[in-house]
Length: 107
Image 1 (spheres, rainbow, N blue to C red):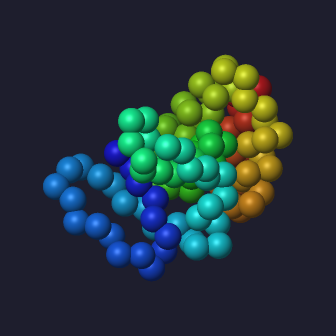
Image 2: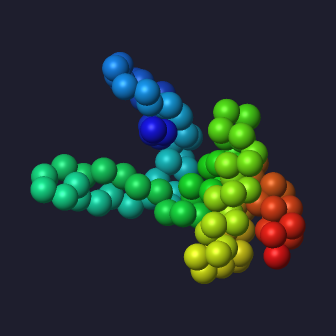
C-alpha cells in the first residue's frame, strides 16, 4: 500500500507493509478528495486517476516506469482524456515530459 503525507509530517510507525511518500505541502491537495469510509465516520483522502498516474511517473525510481506506463494504458482504455492528464502533469512538472512521451507512444 502506498500512502502520501505532507512533507515535514511525522511518518507513522506501522506494522504493515506501507510505502510512505512525502509530497510538497503546496501540491499535496492537488487532485485529492476526501471520502467517507463506508460504515464509519472517518474520512480518507483519495487522489484522482490523473494525479495517481502523474505521481507514478514522478516516483518511477521507486515504483518503476512500467507501472506508470501500464496505468496510463488502462486509464486511456477506460476513457481517460489525454488533455486531463497533461493538465495535471503541467502542475507537477517533473512528470510532464514523461507523461507526454507515454501518451504519444500509446496513441
